[in-house]
Image (cartoon, rainbow, N blue to C red):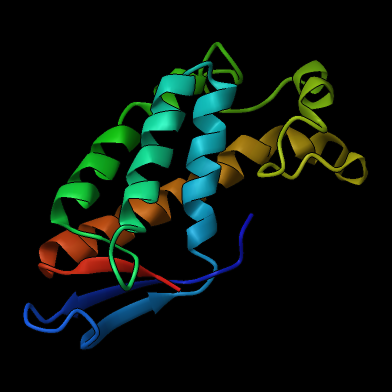
Length: 152
């Protein structure tokens, strides 16, 4: 998971380089990567690619940013993620079976499936979903503040 921040910020209309940072979230860029990875694991490569496309679109701006349209789209693309994992990757409590833990090792960098965790590795998706929840909160904050999300 990439350990770079996201910033909720307003950018003046006349000069895209004048930025008013409202709040910053360390390591939060990685939360996007977690959501992409979870969609892929759930068998929804289309959703994962759509999120990647939204993020790629942010880099046409200077500084790179997600505006209200992109934020709304990203928020929409996160809908249904938890439900899509049930039955495909996890049980109804978002726990992994031990055979699933073993099969996912090496296929994903966003879940902590280290063998040293033993049975606790079954909770890796629950832990990852906390990051997705935080990402939703950051997006909602930006939308409520009529702000953008800026990347470093």
